[in-house]
Image (cartoon, rainbow, N blue to C red):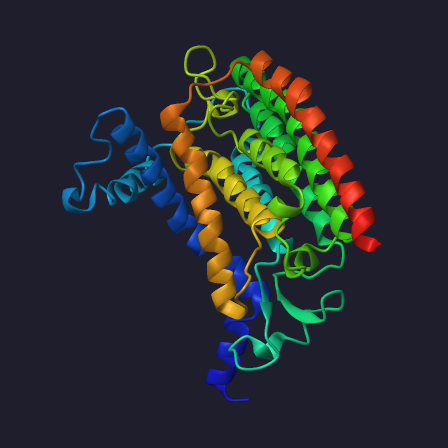
Length: 352
C-alpha cells in the first residue's frame, strides 16, 4: 500500500471521518454558526428587525457569527471566587463531549460492497441484521439502546456544571433541567421502544432499511419524539432552563469567554444529534441512497429539522416550568403510551 493510499484509507475510515470531519466536529462547528445565524435572522424577519447585518451585508450578515465567535473565544474568562477551578473549566468540556457522544453510535448510511470510496470498509462495518456495511463511527448490535443511554447522560452533566459554579441561581436553573430531563427522557424512551417493538429490532439501521419510515408506521411516536426532542435540547417553547428575568441563562450564568461558547454549543449539538436520530427512525434515514451520498442526504434532512426547531423561537413564547411539566405528563405521556400500544399491535400483526 502506497503512502497516498494509506492516507486515503485512514482519512475516510468511518471512525475517524464521521467523528472529526462529517458530520463530526468540523462540520458541526460550521453548522452551529450557520444555525445561530439562521435563528437570529429568522426571528428578526418575523419581528420586523434586521438581525445580523453589519458584517457582510450583501450575504445577510452571515459572517457576523464568525466575528462574534472570534470575539467570544478571545474574551476574558472570569472565574468566580470559591470554586474548584479544575472542575469549573472541565465542566463545559464534558457537557460538549457528552452532547456529541451519541453521534458515535448513530448510523447515517450504508456502505455498498463495491463502486464507492467507502467500499473497502464494507466487511469491517458489516451489520449481520441487514447484511450490509453500515456507515457509523462505532458499530454495535443494539445501537438504539446505547444511543438513548448516552443521550440521557447530557442533563446530568448540565447539573454538574451548575453545581461547580457555586451560584444558587445556576443551581436553580439546573434543577429545572432535572425536572425536564425526567419528563422528556420518559417520552423518548417510550416512543423509541414503540418503534423497536413494531420493527422487532433494536438496530437503527434495520429500522431504516425496512423501507417503511417510522412516521408512517407510528405517527404518534413520531410526534411524541419530536416534542421530546424540543424539550431535551431546550428549544422554544421549552427553553425553560434559561430565563432572562429571574435566572439569566440558568446553569451557564457564571461562564464567560470561550467556556461560555462551549456551554452554549452543547444544546445545539444535542439538537443536531436528536435530529439525526429522528431522521433515521421516522424519516427514512438515507434511503434511497447509499454510501457518502446517503450520509449527505441524512444530514441534510437533519439540518431541516434543526432549522425548524430553532425557528420556533420566532413564533412561540417560553412556557413556565409547571406548564411544560403538566404538558409532558398530562398530555404527551398518554400519547406516548398510545404509541407503545400501537407499536405492539402493529408489530404483532406484522410478524404474523
